[in-house]
Length: 41
Image (cartoon, rainbow, N blue to C red; front, side, top):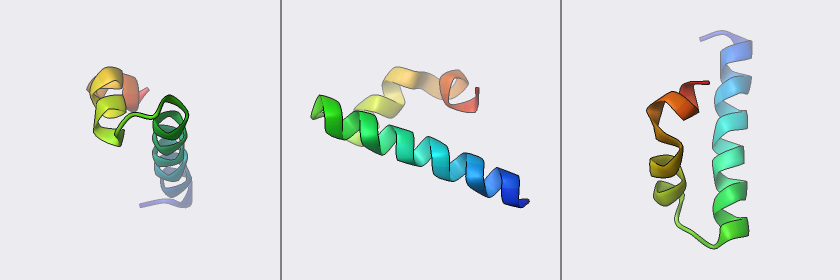
């Protein structure tokens, strides 16, 4: 795994965590809402 890939994963995880806290939802709800294609983008 390259350094860029590590940074990308960290960004996505941090974004999911932030959105979940702001909307007072569980992280899995955010992941389900984004879907696989949304996360891969």
